[in-house]
Image (tube, rainbow, N blue to C red; front, side, top):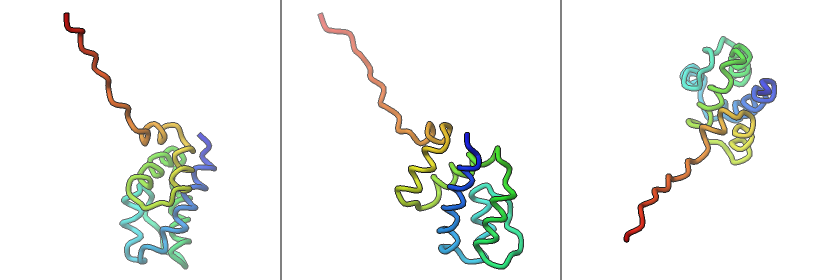
Length: 106
């Protein structure tokens, strides 16, 4: 897993997310996505970036999974996140229906 790439992809999503939420909604957004609570900062985007930087590398796949499940993303963002980590891709892959074979009638 390339943590720098995954962190960069999540940062790109947060760049669009901060426009959708008010400053008061940022702590709830971070909690929902599994990010640390944002510290005080100049702008909403800087607060979200600081929260992402404070997130440990081993939690990034969980954050990416939460972003995929809970946030509206465009197709390019969604595909980039899915391609970034095999764990995420396995979780998001559609399951094939199980085929049941019946014995032939005699």
